Image (cartoon, rainbow, N blue to C red; front, side):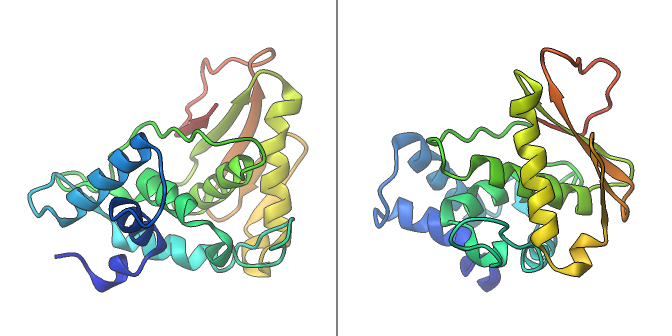
Length: 207
């Protein structure tokens, strides 16, 4: 049985509205939404939405603020578009019933136009992971050159700086990386032209 909490969540409502034709979406998005709704309602599905994780993310996004744009200063919880919530929940909250520490999806792909909030969404995901993943986790963003790779780090820095003091105090920002003091985890931007992933024990890497 699907909880009232999940049914009221923007991610579920987005999927439902796409499936019911209330929102226009491409065929692959429609397929993803249909599968989401089907699996959520299927008691025999081998995966489940980890509502404890989702509630944790909901709570953190109420303290993590938008740094720029028309919604600057607004909690990301309220500023995220429904499709962004859908992507976030799919990437982070689906787990194996037989192994709840393992996420369902090892790869998540987001294809949207320029200036549509990709860098911000990736930055938000990194901030959340720095706070909720096991201690000493390592996260990397990879781009063709250092300048492009630093865009995500800049978004991470700006978002942390704009957020509630209880979030700000959990991080240490240096020229080369962002460290979470709470979990001792770190985020580092890399450039394909300068860096290799050899020897790096990454938990999450974004390219």
